[in-house]
Length: 306
Image (cartoon, rainbow, N blue to C red; front, top):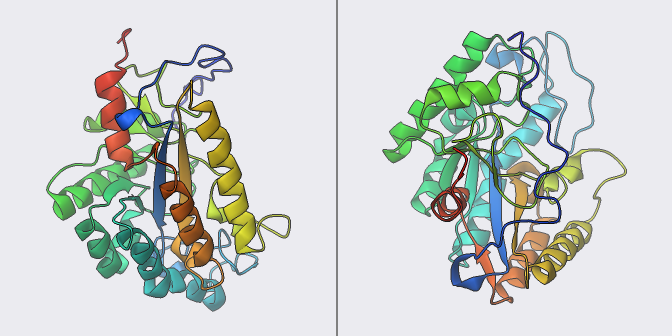
């Protein structure tokens, strides 16, 4: 671990009551980005060299099995890679929409077919760590190598290095290592705003907030979160409506997080179809990839203090 625990710097003020006067493309009131998390196969599993089984973000409520496999949770994850991704892909391609792939590197190699289809559909790749693990206690040299692996993977798949990075469970070293890598325009390991902003620690690094509330992971977090697809749709719709109304004078952004093993189930996919059609029913909504959002912000709202 790095001994300097003062970074990332905490900021309780942000834009406060003076957000920038944002003008999105075509005078949109809201920028909406959909992130499809490609994690299946990169989770904790003794077959991946881990000392325990996975417990998080699935329909299976289990305790970690130390030193052994949990076939139930493994199979639950496999549903996403075998079936769920194809339902997600169709939801977007049927409407000629583009999304972002939060790519866990090892998962991408485990089953490349759905990933290749999403690349062919024009989705951008946003590294989500080489493994779907908590990086907090990971040795800095290992995390640096994981980031390097993710960069080379995206370069191999697309011909270009990635623009953004999202660890999900970062260490105190993650953002510094992202900057040291030299190719990243933005980092998504923040949840503290409805607009992008420039890092106070690394002025050339853009921070684009992600979301854990407009996120289908709430289906897999416990008995007090989403149980029915309509609950997810209602929350997305209400979030969109508020931001769209605010966008008449102060345009904002909205991120929707998706997981194929969750939203890709037959009883849930309809909520995504309904929300996509709901957004398309508004003529001033910009549905965009994360890379496009970052490029637009960097070009139009550069950090004047950098």
